[in-house]
Length: 105
Image (cartoon, rainbow, N blue to C red):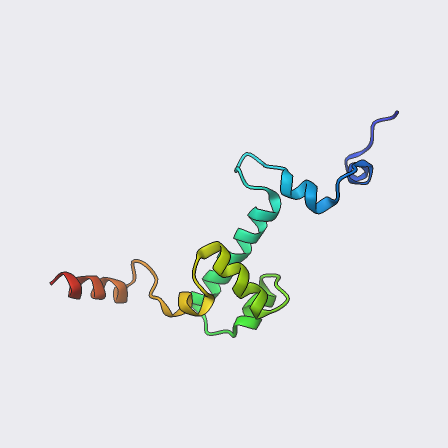
């Protein structure tokens, strides 16, 4: 049997593409689908903090089909809904420091 080229390998496997992707683990310790999901959530988190775009617009900009799909994934990855994340002050901001100073004093 001749060797297959890299692009032909997925077609020769008995596993579906998504199953192969979920099972593979690169040196980072995360599979490609988990890595991609985390990366997209981090991009969404940055947008939530820096602008007032609607959740649906942010969702589409990072590859989700709807605001609700992003919301579900966002909460699964970061443990907080996107709206709460947007309202919560970023760690290390002046507003955050003022709150800590007020509580400690």
